[in-house]
Length: 436
Length: 112
Picture 1 (cartoon, chains in turn purple, yellow):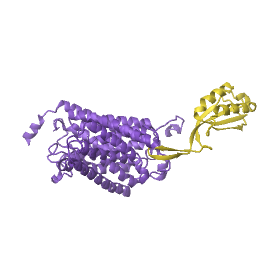
Picture 2 (cartoon, each protein chain N blue to C red):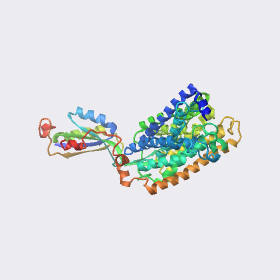
Picture 3 (cartoon, rainbow over the protein chains, first blue to last red):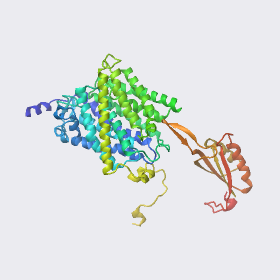
Picture 4 (cartoon, one colour):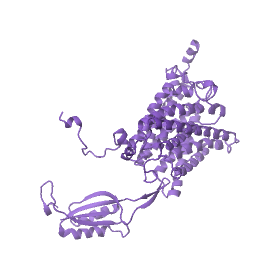
């Protein structure tokens, strides 16, 4: 043991890889405010802060849990070699890893841990879009912690824990099944999308859903948020190479190609269906393209990326109408963008993946693996979220009252409005008004 | 004294304002308003959902005038604000008891 520790201590990090992963970690952290702005701009003026708080709150609770036991559950030795969950005891509070000399791959363990921890936080934050305007903040925070623990950590273990990387045995999707998911089409987007669908059922529709227009209160915020997400996504996708190399470069290129194709496709669908190409459509197209290329960015060529982006942009744009037809209030289209986009990207690897795709030198073998991986995550996340959401609702209550919702959740729950647009006096500070 | 209130199409505001200034008006109050009249609402499709929009944006313009000027000013507004299509708006007048200029305390026609 002693000798081993000394051996590890003299392994030096690759400075190029480390520099890129430090930057990538910063980039993925930027996705949290990016998502908060993307979602915050899309809600009505009375729920902006609550929407943004759900993203910030998710980051706070999930990253603390990540340090406590999340990392261990994802990257610890697979319990019983089953590939279902990592050993929670192995790296509890990051023991043995929170020092400058601990290494994972070619980079310091600390950097890898921080990078992967933000993935967990973003996945949880994504879900919040389906329950805009109506969830108790405390209940959301409780849900976020439980969901990260029971859904994200296991699923991330299935998908992201490769054998002999951090621990000897990893997750079943990555190693036994062999489904390809470079940066989280299944673990992040299908996972969050299926959970969003389940939570929309648990919380029910907003007051007035389908009757009164609920248009975005600030599209510049939505576009700024989409732009920040895109920028941060370079860390998410190209950073998932965990190295500064050609794989990262290809991932970065495809993260632009697919996204631009998705914007074109989304706007085309809107123009044909609604008569207008909207800024909300452009921003949503950006995110749909980013989502779809996430699992595929290192496994496809440039034309494959364009195709994935175009299919995702078109299908996601068509899917936003589903909630009105089927009657679930997925407020900000988490299902249409993340579930549909995640499925498109994951499954299309089976068609256009270099050397493995049906249209690109492979057979149907990889396609079947991709479908199994996607279906497993979708099913597990949906069912587990229904149960967790229902339990939260039955115990502490998930939803604010109708009056609070009509007043606006920002004022009712957080005691502040997003925009104080007038300096006209609304009262006096209590002590001053008493002459103190 | 009369208060003239006009509800007009927003894009007509500049024309009406300039015409009223040319007609000798020394002050007016403009606010954004929304509502419906005979024009009613219309349907819009946005992000895959069809909405009826009942309240349409308009501009409300208020001018205080002497009784003798009221008809002429109303005519100016109606002439300039008209496009001939539905939704051009409405103009009405109401009698005013008293007007006071805050700075000087002048009352009545002097204060207009």
